[in-house]
Image 1 (cartoon, rainbow, N blue to C red):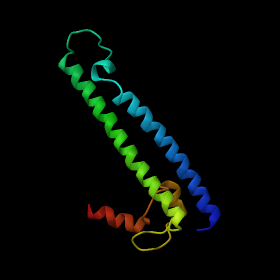
Image 2: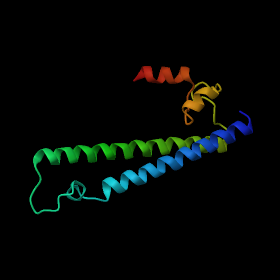
Image 3: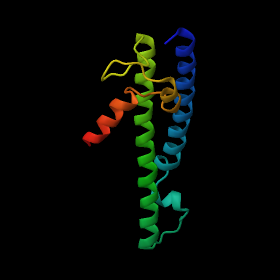
Length: 124
């Protein structure tokens, strides 16, 4: 992969990282900074209905799941940025072949070529 193409992917990954970081901050502020009571808007001294509590709990769990997935995505992006610095970006970590640019455009943090990725997924 030539230097110009590596720089293009580096900029893409840095932009993705910034967007995901912003999403993590937003989700964290919305979910973690408010108590369940605060987020429901119930400021009375009375307890909430069990169905409302269940709905709110489900939404909090969903938001925390999103934050977890976003952190995993950040980790993959950071690994890809490190591989760019090391000069190994765009090479399949399984077979050593060059990962097609079309795959990297679709999944910029891909570590495996399509063939090796399919083999990996078949193992699961």
